[in-house]
Amino acid sequence: MAKKISSPDRQAMNWLLIGGSLVSTFLWATLEDPFNAPKSWILYCVGFWLAGWVGFQVRRRWSQKIDRQVFIFAGSLALTFIAAFLATDVKLQGLFGDYARRTGLISYLSLILFFTAASMLFSLSTIALFDRVTLVVGFIVGFYGFIQHFKVDFIKWNNPYDSVLSTLGNPDFAAAVMAIFLVLAFGLVINSSKSKVVRIWSALNVLLLLVTILFSQVRQGLLAGAAGIAVIVYIWLHQRKKIVAYGFAGFGLVVGALGLVGMLNQGPLKSLFYKASVTYRGDYWRAGIRMFKSHPLFGVGLDRYGAYFRQYRDATQALRRGPGLVSNAAHDVPIQLAATGGIFVLIAFLALTLFIAWRGITALRSATGINQIVIATFFGAWITYEAQSLISIDNVGIAIWGWILGGIVVALSRPTKVEEVLAPVNAKPLRSKKQSIKQSTKISSGSAAQPLVSGLLFTLAFAICIPMFLSDAALKTSRGYAAPTSANLSAYLQIVRKPLGYGFQDTHAKESVAILLAQANQLPEAKTNLLAVLARDPRGFDALNTLALIEEANKNFGEAASNRQKMSALDPWNYQNLLQLGEDLKQSGDKAGAKAIIGRIDAFAAQTSEALTAHKDFGSL
Image 1 (tube, one colour):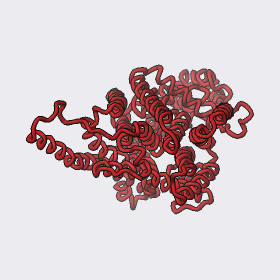
Image 2 (tube, rainbow, N blue to C red):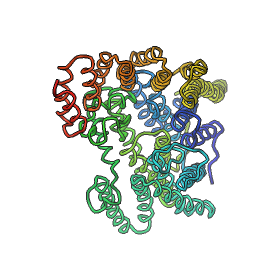
Image 3 (cartoon, rainbow, N blue to C red):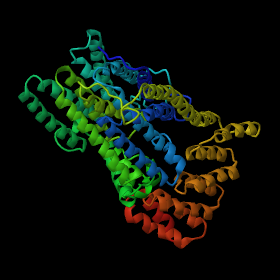
Image 4 (cartoon, rainbow, N blue to C red):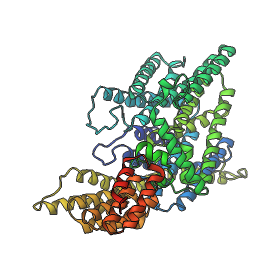
């Protein structure tokens, strides 16, 4: 039977569970970024509300050892993120994150708050409240992906993957979330204390999620889910016959190792697990490691991986996929954090991860029977998240469950026979009835103040999100209009400029508006917007490229060449840009400069068509 939860704690739990569910499932089709943007805004709002609740718990729970450890580890990580943000060159991006990623300071602070709240809200006697989340959210994500496979969708997405998107917008992200809920549902199936209805529904979810992951063709989703299920099966076998459990563990390690090797296109399982995208991830990892080595203390800036990727990638990546295919994430969470946050963020993150793992192992060793199965279920689901995070990004729709599950693992490691003991307001014992009444009043007023503080913080976050929503929606609307004629130019320009009429415009919005203005032949205004982007972020490669194209269209080849020189400094392996730079230099009369381009391209891309064109166009100068 579930333990009764106090009203403030139950309210916090509702916010956490409903908020977490929406971060994974909510989308808004009429936005420029229909998936990540609305999810991040919900994350901010609920995270801010939880900040009020967590803030009131610090003094109340500091005397409890596990709570104190949570505050120390989570607080240390939050402080390192703040330090990395202060060192970030483009503050707006560091605060809110790169466009379509949204993993800036506010997102990570919100995730830390979800973790901290989950570690204090759940226990073995209340964890059954999470079952409905497991069943409902898992079903929504799985069923939506399932019908998408059969081309049935209530939204007509422009789907470049021709695969399962579910509510995450990407097959890899969808498979990762489904793998997490697959593990949670599997744990409910073998939990004999659950009702038949719950176990049957869970079994259907297992089947649905497994089939949909197969439809997505994302191998790492299967491998990560298998790792989590293996934890549960091992505990289940260990309770019955230890020798069988040890044999299963050995077999699992061998198969897991072969699967990892297969993902690298080696070994007997390579036909099952290898995909070219794994090779591409290696390109991203190398670039992230180079960023970290060059900026070890605070990284290149929170969520600034994309701004530095072109500079730190190698020729192998540029030649393998073409210089135009770039990435704004390392596709490995520890490498991403090291590259963008530096050594202090990395150490604090790894310390928190090891703390969760230690608490999970401690909980498994101290529990027995059904309780041990329950703990194994959540620990296995957390392992699934951690496994996929080594080859994917911290997409907020996935990350939310990794942080909530991490908090639950810590929560379930508390001694089952120890009731929660609240820290006294004063260290000294009460000496009189008057003092007792006074202390009771303090506790009561604190309980009353918490919803007010949480509500104010929620309102602040909501107010921050409104202009971002309006700008994103306006940008989506402006793209729906065809290039204007002289008759409707004024109305067109009013619509196109609208996204810049709100606060918190990122470079994506400014660059997009500039392109639309250029297409309407409003070149001075377009150039002004692009120069404003570069004033804020000198590493704005796309802004430089658009400026170069505008100058080339107007035969200002000297100005175009100047922009392309800056681009080549940011992207030294871009042989396509080098060729165009040579053409601009040639047209501007700099024949020696154009001829020198041949050697720059031949140095790493001699076998490309661009190299042949360079020899043909500049060789005789």
